[in-house]
Length: 199
Length: 199
Ligand SMILES: [Zn+2]
Ligand SMILES: [Zn+2]
Image (cartoon, rainbow over all chains, first blue to last red; front, side, top):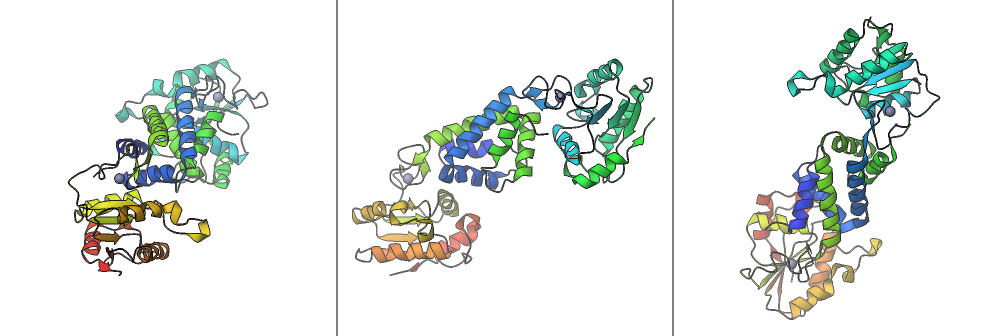
């Protein structure tokens, strides 16, 4: 016996979510069908709208359906500081510390030769262009303190050493091997305050 | 700072899933947007198709988009045994034991006066009609071994004691307070084989 085709397909479809195995997918499908069809319709509409319309901010590369994201279109931000991050959730984490009011550049990943992810995939050409054509005085490399994040930070620092820009790296407080997304606000604020020059 | 409206809405929409808090919802949204938009579109379509088309089997009440579910439309099943269950996943669990070849009736819940769930909400009128108009010789009450499941089983047994039907309750092996869905196949097969008469 198997469930009817539409139920089987729904269970299978839930498997695209991170950390969702067969049993959890089954629970999700039956929960919605038995108790929350409005929730299912809302989720369906939210998924298709986001998948079709969310692109990247043309300035910082974070995920956004607008041409310019909320922060890039905010004229009250400091234009002399730029913070480089691996992902959009890291941007939220840094914003929540309240300790930074500059601009951002989101790599949407890190250098990973094994996976074929090189400088172009991270939009580094765009980053370097922005650094050369603006009045940025400090570049804060806030990639994750992992092997790949460190390598990415050092690659960027190396590429722009001819520019008159202070390059710093967040340091104190961020656990080695950890991911920014899971660091508490206090620790991250400390790491930002204790950033050190890489050049 | 907040994420763009479509991303915020997607994160919020994931909260309708059981066991999904704000952080998990955020992970799910970004995973799909960054790495699996095809998965998001597939999930969206599966959700809307299931929410719109899956109803109840007209005979056993399990969830199905067909008028009759797979089992109710299978003419090779024993017509003299009927197994009463709380939910469609319990039906799969019993089928997987391979120890039962009769029909099913799915309550889609259990009696719960506190939540206002009475006999009508479980389709018991339909169950009693079916018992009176067919050649069923044994009714197996396989509701969960919880307080509500036991109360529901006893209520059903009481209502049909005027009929010449053997009423049994699955017994041995099912942990008290547990749910059928999470019982391993061997335990459930044992519970079925060791069923005892309630009347
Ligand atoms: Zn932006
Ligand atoms: Zn059926």
